[in-house]
Amino acid sequence: MRRSTFGAALTTIFTAAFFTAAFFTAAFFTAPTFSAVAGPAAADGFFDDFDSLDGKRWFVSDGWTNGAHQNCIWTRSGLDVADGRLTLTLKREETAAGDGKATRPYRCAEIQTREAYGYGLYEARMKAAKGSGLNSAFFTYTGDPAHDEIDVEILGRDTARFDANYYSDGKGENQEKVAVPRPADEALIDYAFEWTEGRLRWYVNGALMREVRRADVPDAEQKVYFSLWNGAKGMSGWLGPKDDTIEERTMVVDRVGFTPVGERCLFEGSLSCSAGWTGW
Image (cartoon, rainbow, N blue to C red; front, side, top):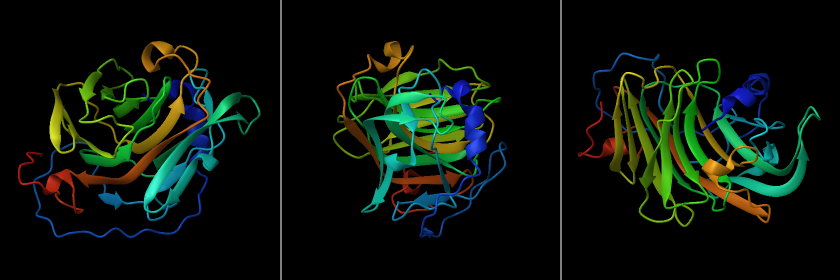
């Protein structure tokens, strides 16, 4: 979970910064049109296979921590794009926040989209980091005060499962443990969640693993995030005891895509291209 109450104001301040990168143009495929569901404002779909880091799409978290619960400082140096993959690194290295008000024994990494998105299908192919106290996360998030959020969080203490969770108006505790076919730190795995009015569905390698139909499903536009961090104060019950012997761990993202409600098969290999997919 984002635990946003500790750092949302700093996130707002830094979202004006730009990270210089080459522009990536995604290849799109002809797709049929489906009727849309009412909800957050429509946004264009996108696909990114990280041939480069597109600064027009992504903002890099740099120079702050989200609060006392986090044992690291977000740094730009924790991100690398090479060979068509985004790597987020957590490293044991004493690091100070940009304002000098906080110091942590680790540096960590996070990116977020500059644009917010609404109902649709969110997909990522990634490999998580292993280790007690670690969290490899793919999620969407509004920021405060609304605090809507939808999560795929892989805890390094148990990479055989991930937490499928959501927040609506700041209310959470909706998580469920979902099994993956092999340890999430050993191979790239396809994760997806489908978000429509009153419904959330999580998938692993194309298979439906969890479905929620409730009135409290989030309904506000959200940005897309990837992050790797380790916990500190108050996190051991969830993330496991912090392991200060860890020197370095990495999370790898091979690709990410968003398909808005009403569209289908915007990139090759999307879950929405499958004849058996029952979305929208």
